[in-house]
Length: 93
Image (cartoon, rainbow, N blue to C red; front, top):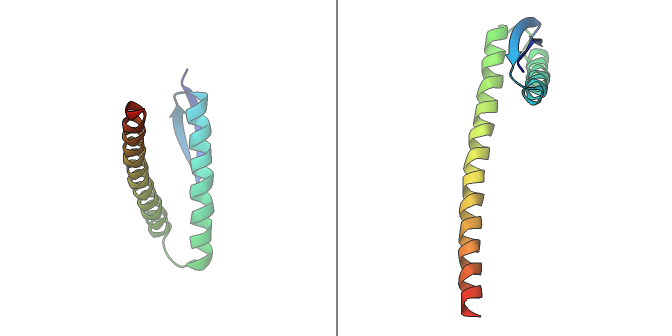
C-alpha cells in the first residue's frame, strides 16, 4: 500500500510516495546518504550554490552505481564460467 512521506534533502522538504515499506526505508536511507554527502561538500565549498553541490553528489552516486553494475556483471560471468567448469567436471566422473 502506497504511503505519502516527506523527505528533507539539502534543507528542502520533498513530498514523495513510497509504494511499500521497503521502498520507504530505502528512500529514507538514500535521503540520509545524500544529506551526508551534501553536507560534506557544503563544508568544503560553502560559497558554491546548492544545485552545484547536489549535482556533484548525483554524479558521484551515479558513477558508483555504474561501477557496481559492471562489477555485478563480471561476477555473474565468473559464476557462469565456474558453473560450466563444475558441470564439465561432474560429467566426467
